[in-house]
Structures are given as structure tokens and as C-alpha cells.
Length: 578
Image (cartoon, rainbow, N blue to C red):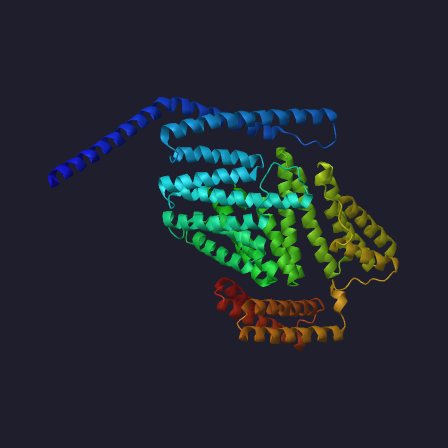
């Protein structure tokens, strides 16, 4: 009886295996029979995507309210919508055939579902895009495992979709637009931001399993995560992720230009925390990586990538110049801005010669650089040159506006340049010209829709009132503002108070706050030292004493950075102290 039962069980198992084999053969036959049809549908979908992309690149912006041009753009939009409708129809047919022939858990089904997600994202239908992408990720996890490279790439793409949805929701809130294509009303932008962080983290863990802890793709994913923490205002967490990303890039035997962007993001974190010395080191490191990558590419005869082209290097120089301005190294700041201006002028001439578009953006970069130079010259007391630079910045913004649509005009930037013009006139005691500058600045801001309680509006209104009353109450901003001995004594006492505060903060373990306090003390002492140098007191006893105080502050600053394991920044400060 036992043998009979065993035989029956064996026969039953054999029958099940035969049925499974027959099912597999049937599925394989069906997959072979539908392969050509599925391939043709996929090729048609790709062809339609190329057509949509070509329409996007040829669509022109209506700058002059030309009715004929507006009608042409409407026809183009209708044609593009028809193509999207057709591609969705084609992909639905392909997906049905794939599920029927391959099963619902096949990676090819995930690929087609992901293509749906990409198309929804192009249409700003973020809720549908995320749903489709989540489905694709689940299929790949079941089919290939959660640590397979394709699965990790899909998870990272899901994170990007949450990030894109977050940005879209913020823009929608800013313009109060209720007529959008998205129907995801349940989750806020903060919810989607947190989801993006979680999925970037999942992708980074998967890439570590696939390629190792220090692979560049791990660094890139960590950088993406850090950018989201910066948006949340969690700079400590962002710096932690960026430090891990830098470890990945620095482990590579070759120069990876993407590391420059990581350093720039690090600098942005330090700038927002008020730690300008660490920001200075970060931007200096970014510039070093960019220049090394540029030299390597030029030596090998390779194409100059966007990460280290003229525009990107110029942007790093501007950020570096700002750190020098914030730490009151105005001469160095002006030199850096001048270098950036030379690069942007060359970039502008190249853009103009190639006639490939981007002229407005190139002029805006020139205008911003000139404006930064004007700010420094105003602080240095070089009012004649500052006035010329502010006027040049305004002219460049106006020239850029002539080629832009109305909704992209530089009204706020024009207002800031006009405010600079008015401020310089006010410092020179030319109150009539100052009033005209401030009034024109307010006119630009009102035309742009800036509310009356905005900080910029309040500041310019205050200066206008001072100009009307003919009293130059502008606060600090130039070397002449602190020329009295009593002011120097006050600043010295302030620096000492900050020293004591930093010591108290170190004792309780609050190193971030201590670094901020020491950075402020260092800025005060740098400014005093610069004033002595400009006054020709470079050999006096007071000058030498202040020089020792700057060196001492740099040394204490470096020790704090060592405690936070930021040894590179510490080495830079110690070299300066020596």
C-alpha cells in the first residue's frame, strides 16, 4: 500500500511537470509568434517619440504677440498632442501582447511600463508617471531582484520622478495654477520630497551591492540625495551625503568632473550655514577639479563637457568670489570676479559666433558678473567705477530682455542694478540722481508683481526715503564707514566676544555653532588687517598684532574642523595661518 501511494504521488508530480513544460512550450511558441509584431510596435513607438522630440526643438517662443506666429504654435501643439495620443495607443497594444506572451512579471513588460511613465512625465502628468514607474520597479524586483543594476536604475528614476513632481507642485503653488494636467491632489510637495530621498537611498544601497561602495554611480546618487536635503534645509545631513559622495569620486584613479558639482553643492551648504571659510575651500576644490578635467580633456583632444566648460568654471569663480567678499577679502574677490568676467566675455563671443542660441543667457552671465564687481567696488569706496559697473550691468540686462518673452524679463535684476546706481549716487551726496534710481527700481519691481512687504521693496523704499530727506543712512558697506578709532575698538571687542562664545560652544560640543562664531570673528579681523594695509601701516606694531590675531583665529578654526573630520579644509587654513 505504501509503494502504491508513492507511485501515485510520483505520477501526480510527473503529470504536473509535464503540464508546466507544455505551458512553457506554449508560451515560448506564442512569444516567438508575436515577436515580430511586438518589435514593430516598439519601433513605431520609438519613431513617434523622435517626431515629438523634433517638434519640441522647433517650437518657437512668441516674443512679439504676432497672431500668425501664435496660430502656428497652436497648430504645432495640436499636432504634438495627436502624436502623444497615437504613441499611447501603440504602447497599450504592445503591452497587452507582452503580458499575454511573456507574462506580467517579465522585464520587457517593465520596460514598456517605464516608457509609459516617461511619457506621462513629459506631459506633466506626475501622478500617472509615478504609478507606472512604481509598477515597473515592482516587476523588476520580482523578475531580477532588488540589487540588479536594471532594478537600481529604475528605482533611481522613480526617485527623480518624485523630485520632478515636487518641483512641479511648488511651481504650481507659486503661480496658483489649478488648470494643470496632474490629478495627484493627496500628497504635498514635502511628501514627494521625502519619497524621493527614500528612493535615492534605496538606489544607492543597490548600486553599492552591484558595483562596490566607491563606484562613481554611488557618488552621483548620493549627490542627488544631498541636493534634496539642501532643499529641506538640512545642511548637516546634506554635507554628510556629499562627503560620502566625494569619497567615491576620489577613490577613482582618473579625474571625474562630476566631483566638481559635489564640491559646489558642499560650498552651497556652508554658505547657507554662514561658514564662509569652509565654503571658500569647497569652491576652491571644485575649481581645481574642473581645471584638471579641462586640461585632461584638451590634452587628449576630447570634447569639453558641460561640467567643466567656460560657463561652469565662470559660475564656480563667481561663487568663490562671493566667499571672499563675505570674509572681507575684497581685493581678492575683485580679482576673482575679473577672471570670471574675462571667461564670460570669451564665452559670449563664442556663442555669438556659433549662432546656436543662448545669447540672452550669455548676456545675463555677463551682467551678473559685472554687478558683483560693482558691489565690491562700492564697498571699497571706488564709487566712480562702481557707478559705471552698475550702469553696465543694467544695460546688459536690458539688451538681454530685448530677446526674451515678457514673462521671462529681468525686471528684478534691473531693479537691483538701479538700486546700486541710486546707492552710489547717495554715497556721493547726489540725492536727486539717487531718488531717480530708487524710483525707477521700484517701478520695475511693481511691474514684475513684487509685493510691497517683500524685503527688496522695503529696503529700496527705505533708501528712497533717505534720499528724499537727503541723509545718507545706508549702514555699513565701505571702508570709510569704520574709519574712527572708536569703531575699531568696538569691532575688536566684538571679535573677542565671538571668541569667548565659540569656546563656550566647543565646551558643550556644538561645533557647528562654534565654527560660525569663529568665522564671524575671522571676518572682522581680516577687515581690520585690510584697512591697515590700505592705510600703509604695514610695519606698525598694531598691524603686526592684528596679523597674529588673524593667524591665531585661523589656527583655532582649523582645530575645530579637525574635530569634525574635515581635514582638507583644516590644512588649507593652517597653511594660511603659517
